[in-house]
Length: 138
Image (cartoon, rainbow, N blue to C red; front, side, top):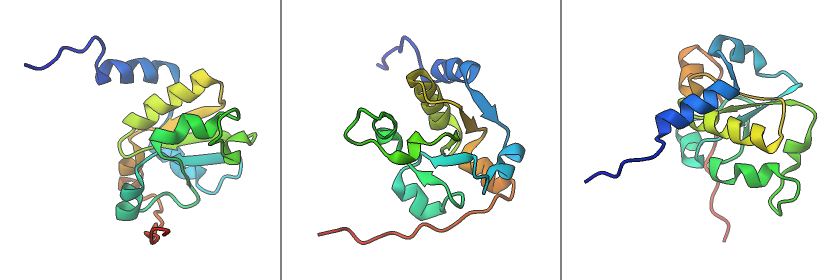
């Protein structure tokens, strides 16, 4: 028997989307190469190897994002300390919506996500760069 969730993913997405900025894909296409914006790809590295990424985007796996953003974390990444707008994306816009709300709640602003994610980006003719798989370090 399936468990009944108090709050399912659809409700979480509704709540996130009500509080964050969502950038339509056609507008997001204009952000590539904008030095006032950091595009952040949240997808798993295997997704990047398989499909590529938006040129110039920073890869920040969803599972590490909050740790990479927080200056008090031992995993902090300087890229998140810049005075820029952070625009997140994932494959379809679900992970990025939830992540944008979480980072906004943490105090990272300005922040937004791309409507429809990487899938919509590619469908709209957005540029894609290949991500090469690197050999594991021994």
